[in-house]
Length: 161
Image (cartoon, rainbow, N blue to C red; front, side, top):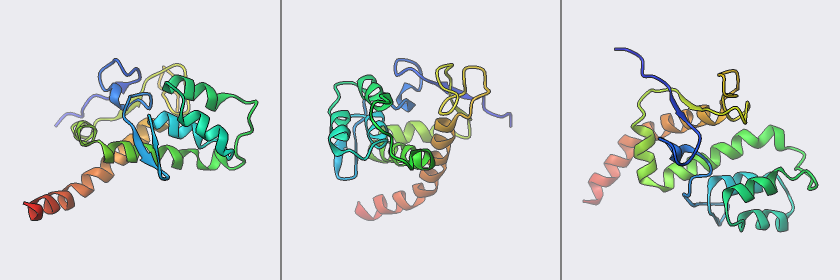
């Protein structure tokens, strides 16, 4: 069986735009509702509760991203060591809390998922494949985790009916 071609995503307006952290799927994490996974991720860069709240209340994910990238505010000291786990928590919450997204992600089979952008060589592929594609890798980890949970979910659904 031939390997599936990679699935590229970036803009919310494109195919698989739902995989973008800017996609309008609210999540609940740490006892709060966040308009997007981007809002949550950006806010976690800081310890200051007021700045976190400002980011959470930002009208758009782009504004949340700008606030999170503002280096006039000090990043939490442990940010570099924890940013992947923060992203993983946000992505997992998004795909667990929205069944239609879970189905979309599971429907990608074994395809490699790639955030294709020259704007980011850590979370994305750097536009030329040289980037780390950490968001794509985390999406694939979440996909595997959701796939493992499918039999458990089916059993729960069966017993509920």
